[in-house]
Image (cartoon, rainbow, N blue to C red; front, side):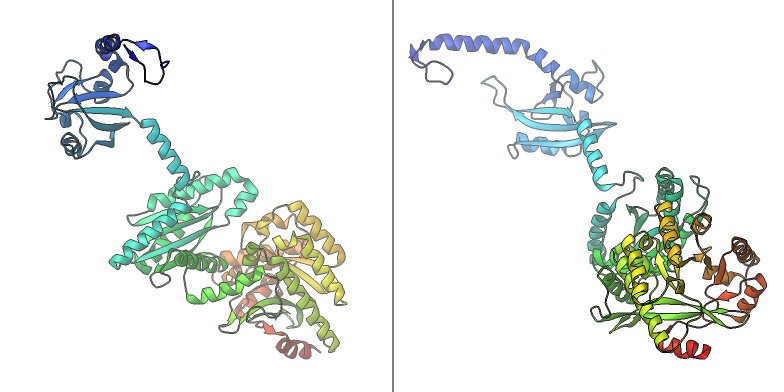
Length: 578
């Protein structure tokens, strides 16, 4: 008799060791009798092999997992002949030799994923010292599917199935390391769809999503080896082109422009595309630099009406200036200054000055005058458009008052640009009215040229704001009319007094009969609506003559007169008029 010294039993209670051993032997015998049934019921496949990797036995689950025919005599066959897994023999021998304790490998068999675990076991017979190999096969198809789904959500765009921004940047970083070591080339193409927002605004997000999916399918269909296409978000896409070089990337850009211009199945209109290109290592040696520079080049392409642009260092100087627009602008901002230039508008029949447009310019002390293309659009995106509009109208009002005090009269109205986003900002519109009143002027001296009408969010609210400003005395004109579908859709709703024919159409009146016909239709339509028309970008006498023949008698552009600083404009135009 002994006292119990094991947990779980009441200490002090006497037990019989012989009785305990007898109970254990009985339990082992029962376990041995039912072991087959227990193994057969397990959800995992089990097999045992000897030191020569010959199969000694397996359960039904194992047989089914590996497609073993019932009664085909698999006992005695080599394990690596049944489980066709690369490296399984080396892993098994390392375990049996004591060089490893266990191993785990994942493999696919048809549509099923299995995890194979190997471990050593020692038989229960005391006279048998030879180890055996236990093979456990677990079906992990569900686990793999879940992992794939997580990866899909983390690295792929849910709408188009293309790689997302995260995977794009990770791939770019890895590719840069590779091409840098091998002295290879790489180009990043940054793309933004043109006129896509018009589709979203007029036909809804469902149609917009269909357009994105169709465009993504086109990109995916033409992508070649060494090219990765990704959707960065919204209507922005990007491509990593390895070993293409600049000329090869230009070929890709032209291919994509043609591809996107083809009619869409999802909507009865077309979209365009603006593409910026930045090459490694010339335009940047880091992923951030390449993406940023390609983005800058894309903005330049969009400001020019679409197509593609190669990055140039001057673009960074321009963007540095534009970045300041998010801050309240003053006369001097970090070595740069804002200034208004003034471009005359003439009556083509008499040559008389009938108005002037105030145009914003940005001066950099190191680089000189910065290209103003797209300034308002960038200001909109960066949240600085309200302050920019306020500065512009205040500067224009002060200049008009200064001319008046000098005895100089400005015929007609002074026009200034206002984006849709600025118009919908009530604080901006209030600042405009206040600036005019503070200068002792009347709104009747000003015309607001509305830009980006395709981006109007709430048309009714915009109309209400415009009507209030018209009551105060301002007039409105649609800028760049004919350059986008939005010109047509909003002309019938917005209370505008004039329209400015887009420069691209003015250029076409001498080279294409269709261009001449379109301008003629615009002029006749405006006349019937009681709207005055100004042709922009007039550069040649022949254009002047053609416009007069079409009934458009108001114009501005290089032929009429280039934009000038206030003093030079007054000297050439106002004093001459006086």
